[in-house]
Length: 173
Image (cartoon, rainbow, N blue to C red; front, side):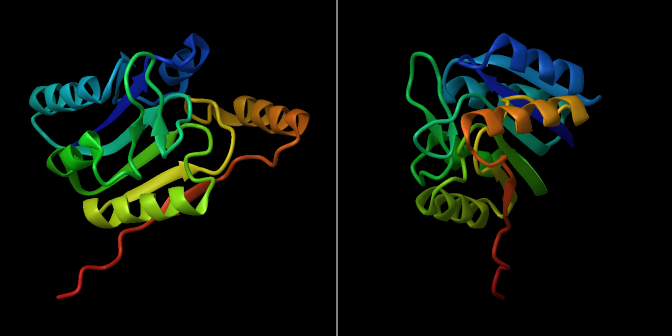
């Protein structure tokens, strides 16, 4: 079981660097993902290399209209969409009790996005973490990056982003 980070091609070089600096040991980082198909291929490849399922999946990039990330030349990834190709494939790649973290702005900022992410958590039987506002597309990066995020939020007049957690509903037996 392993941690995998998938970074969209619309992520800034600085945010990609944050992943390599603060992403943690043992985190397999794959950047420059151009599409959902690239993300699915990266998950399949890493599962074969590691010979195990994913325990933590980080999805990083600029926020999209839904709850996911943008790609430069293809449709956005939206985990709140039941028809998302990635969402349908994830069940095959995630270990029991896996965690998904969406590192993009506003992934959990509206009722509709939150309802969609709760539905995804239920369907995949996994916890999903998503930010309510602005965020760097890289890991929180310790006190320096967290402080910079708070200052940036203050400058643009928004409240600091917080994680919202979507836990799967217990299965009825």
